[in-house]
Length: 246
Image 1 (cartoon, rainbow, N blue to C red):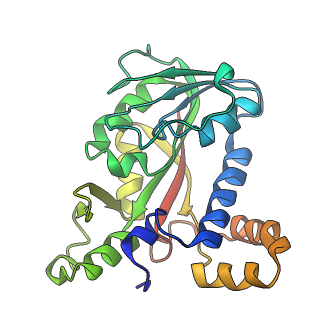
Image 2: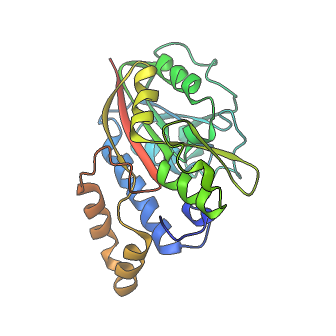
């Protein structure tokens, strides 16, 4: 178990070097994942603008949902607002069937959305045949770390079931094993292309390496993305998967 407070594990704490590294990993992974030709990209990542902006700068038409079954946490920091269509909605009923080429659900969107099965079915509905979804969720590692911190020992053995974990602020996160995430995607009719922990390098390792030379950031990111811990949910606080609609 990682000896780090829950707020740090979720990215809202003060582990500056690690979260700078984490965001760099996400950005590079998204860059490699986005379609190679101009496409319609739907962003369900909560209205923060990070990934919408990146997709727009790569030449894609982006629809950013500002409130996908939850309130956006703070204003969007999107700098390319003229390249992105912002929509405030509780679901995807405003989109017709098979209308987008790619869906990005970063920022733990499907863990905060407790009715993830319904949400993923909606994602599959709006994807065109051959379209892809990139989904990031909280892992069981994160869930167990939070429960241990709260001394909820009686729940730590219930990892075969859906794990709903309360946060000190009253919110609930749904944590997934790799098998549960695969079932979520397959249940929506999507074929999993790959699945892995978002990061396998520990915060202490990242802090140590960057502390000695900040120029090693690109090396760390490359090392992370060239690792192949497919389906390994015993490490990493988040899981990320890419899935395709037949």
